[in-house]
Length: 440
Image (tube, rainbow, N blue to C red; front, side):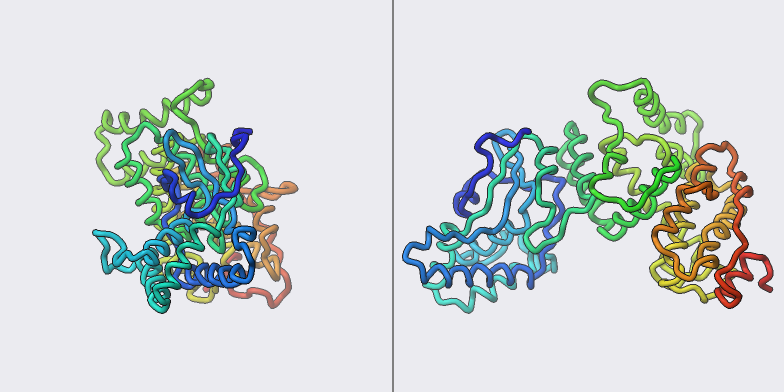
């Protein structure tokens, strides 16, 4: 345990704000909305009103939850609580007379500028004495539980994971933190650019690529169940760090992945296909990945690969969240009925092209589509358990993931079989006809 002996204490907002606090690169950007910030102000004002009825308000502080800090040299990195602290800092600046957000403030709408405007409008309605009283109440009477540790991994293990009325950190947020720490030797400019590119993908895309694809492929290809990607599963993607002791296996993967770009220069690989296959070779989904910057490059590449597969297989739509239109099935597929089997199909296709490139891709598409969508014909309702059981091959079920992992030839997908069964004679007639090759 690395939490300081006296590292858990109550601290007033004023005292906390006076400390040398920093927001580390791995933290998510400010995401609070004006209603969320206003709710915090109203709660504080309610607490202020209640405290006014007590002879000594200091005996009943208003606690705003926990703030977890990582002692990092001469400053403290805010691991949990940054959304609250940034909102309170803006509120105090407005209450104490600040006119603008910063010398470089812009009219561009961002969460920070939107919340700043909301807080200014709220404070404008207060009398000068009310503003002063509220600022003093926040600084002196509002408290947090201050938790300090000198080990950032320990900080992530103990943090509450749910910011004050805010958004919990997702598993991919913790992976971002881990791999940014592995970039400790890189420049701040490179780390900032890496975070900016990561955040530009958006939480939806990041959650999707890990939860529905990378995690499932990593587990299913090993014949293991993948019921759901959680913060307890992030070890799957922590990768190999270039520093510290390395096992022979880790040395092999570190050397192999590091030399792939050099091999392409030696081979004068210049075509688009050569470059694409080089990336696929570097980021093999059933091999350990390198920690740090290569991890971020891998994730960006896999998001592009997935988008390419979606456009290739379902050209009329933007992914499986909307109507799905395979060229042989028109516009009859809908989100609620086919989303899960479409995700299963795309996961299998992503793994296939990662191992075998675009060779035999039409063959793979035909067999993997039939294998995935067979579930939709066999069951009235396809649930997550059915998807997971098929993915990892429970009870001897054919799984393309284990087949592809153990084969050197992508044509192994031809050995996949379907039951040929159907829920009843009226269930999914067009899809049943398609899968049995009888659709005109």
